[in-house]
Amino acid sequence: MKEYSQSIDSGTIHAETFFRKLPALAIAEDEQSVDRFAYELLNMLMNGVGADIGQLSLLPVGGRVEKVCIVKDGRPWLKEGMNLHLFNPSKGFAGHVINTGQTLLVKDIWEASLEDKPNPFLEIFSCMDDHYVEEIKKPVESTLFLPIKRANEIFCVIELGRYRSKPSFTEAEQKPLDAFVRQYGALIINHILDTKNRIALNTVYNKLNLMSRFIASNAKVDYADAVTVYQTLSAADLGFAFFRRGSGYESHALRIVAWQGEALMDIYFPEFIPSNDSILCDQSEISYPIEGDRSCRRLTRFRKRIDENLVIKKKEKQFLLDVIDKTQSYVVYPLHMLDQDLGAIHLASSRKDFCRFLQMSPFLSLYNSLLKSFLLNERVAEHLSEFSLKIHNPGFYCLAGLKSGLLKENPKLLNKPSIYGAINGLEGLLADLHEKGKILKSRNRDIHIRRWLKAYVNQKSAQHSNINIHLDVKGKVADNLSVRANYEQLETIFDNLFANSLRAISEAHTQSVIELGWVNITLSQKKNKLIILFKDNGRPYKTVSGRGTPQIKSIMKELGGSFRRYQEPFRIYLTFPINTN
Image 1 (cartoon, rainbow, N blue to C red):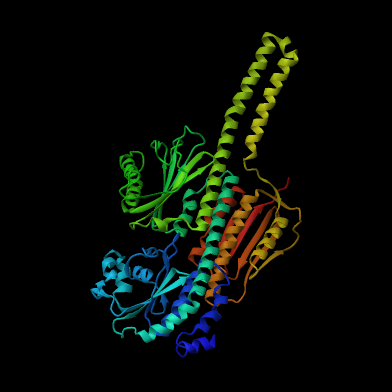
Image 2 (cartoon, rainbow, N blue to C red; image 1 turned 90 degrees about the vertical axis):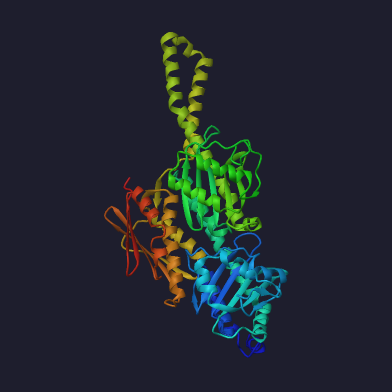
């Protein structure tokens, strides 16, 4: 590593320092890992050539095209909520670099022409975000664009810029950057992508796991929460998710979850009859993705239906119309399984000719496929339970009436084996149907909480070997002490708490406050209550402290327990009523 550093310009690019930091940066593998990798990489390159602003953009052919990181004056500039991540890589200087495959050195990004052709940046900068132009583009004059290749595919572009008060970049300064990118660029960006993929897989797992618990406990599925995966893992800055509601073909209820940027709205239509050739139509043969643009018949027709709808609120209607009007290109993915049309996912973009970037990444495709299975399972559970209830009580009422009538009019008939057997058979069929309907209904049970927690801690310890997880029992807590709950409720509570701890510990690692993270769970008994104290040595911040709290409170209330959160030190108290039966 040292020889390489000297060979590319006497240590201008301090690669060895960056690679020494990688293990510490990767320790948590949380949502901030990619930001930390990109920040350190940009800082190293910027310091090496005296750049003031650095940008790192990922350009996968399918999936999320995004600016992963922007660093200005040594500090991260691109923050959550700025909605500047997504862009069209076929335009501007990035498009020029992708077409040529070569590093681009621009002396002055505001010149009217580039290599005797119109300046590609000036053709698009008026469409950029005003905040981005004002703070990132206007102060800069000279810029270097470094393409990073995987085989012949350019899958990343790094942009380094200097303020106008400084001299322009030179070819001599470009050479060490090219040498570094050539030898290590693909390796580093592949590492960043691998981390992003692990985070994506974890996101998919958590959302589907939570959804399966909701279905298993017959709770209301949060469709808006289910849609956030499409927001975070796709290149769509606009979109709709259509969910068919009701258990039969006669139902025309529809739930639409729409989003633009990070704003999201969940809207219910009690009556929405699809057009004959609609993807949402039961007779539709379409089970494959369909591409379209703002002028296509489907989008025009949908806009007209929303505009003329008198049921939804004015605010909801305006939100939907805004999403439709901003759509320039889209891809629709039908949620179709076992001849059931469950809805559709409409990924859209405010950019023209953007369909190829709206194709789902492997992890989003996995999520989409499993989501269809969950939606089908929800429909089956609802349909079977509803069918069972519709038949059970009226069925037994009619059967009782038939028996009563026979006893009154002709009691001898009941002594005939054929009549007696038929009535008993019908009674057994109704009882069996009712029991089958209850199979998919959630049932609480007596759970030995000490044994369950021990198994949970062992499982998490195996998954997170870099964190010390400890279960401590204070006083006398019997092994067979039980609480009345179901496994889905307990898993949801402790998964939320553990996810918060992971993010808090990751934050502490980032600020070099701790070397080893730990989570302590203390179990004790007080009269007829079981008390659980949950603590960690992380550094809670806003997005951690409130994550999952409403859900935990709701479940604890259902179980007859309580939830309390304290700061300094951060700790959670849970109390469960002990099952005395």
